[in-house]
Image (cartoon, rainbow, N blue to C red; front, side):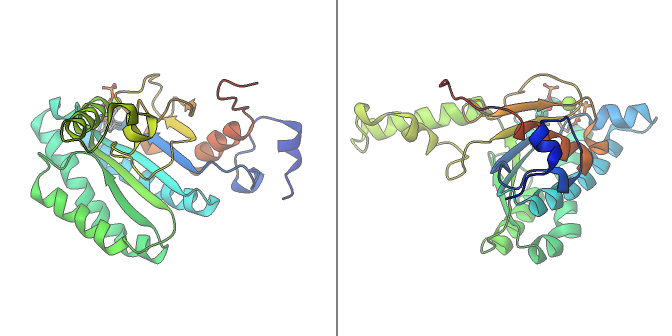
Length: 254
Ligand code: IPE
Ligand code: IPE
Ligand code: MG
């Protein structure tokens, strides 16, 4: 494939899709969508206005990712720790999947996108769960971009459950202790079947993982921006991908 001049020269961002090299597109991009509340506060709006606006960014970035040929896009939408927030905010957040799916499902289907969910179904309100199940079922046969929502997701909870599952399999004789390896662990995580993320993006200036994919991000490239999620645009996304393309991934080798 022909690489654009700027990429050959290793120049910093030219943030358009056309400026990206087509032969080094990350397979799996994971995003910690953060800063909705601060975005709203900056405008004198209630925090939930930021969540509402952030939903539009989800759509924009899903389309951009699909156009680039990214195969998996995981979006951190609600953590197992986010239940600590005020009840009204949690209730609002739990209504968003339903709203998103009502507005966007037809277009997701038209674009061959497959929706998945990664998280605990326990404690999710029935209306949240049924909206997600509808989207998952109606897009199950789609073969394009996999849009994976991390909802009621926590990496420690996920790993504890995987370890408990292995212990139980050892006890019943399904698994021998010698068979406990990285593959045995990975296949018991909620991300089972997905490759590890190549690139992690976090918006809003926070430099932490907040209990997100701790196992899976072992060798992912990390990219942070101060931009709040509602104002995160295609341009920022291409900038992240462009930087990813200029990095050398060594995995401990030379
Ligand atoms: C991200 O934005 C959305 C969720 C965590 C659900 P925040 O709501 O965390 O916004 P800030 O970080 O408080 O600005
Ligand atoms: C991480 O953001 C969770 C999601 C984006 C869903 P938080 O806003 O909850 O993270 P902390 O509390 O700043 O670490
Ligand atoms: Mg936050």
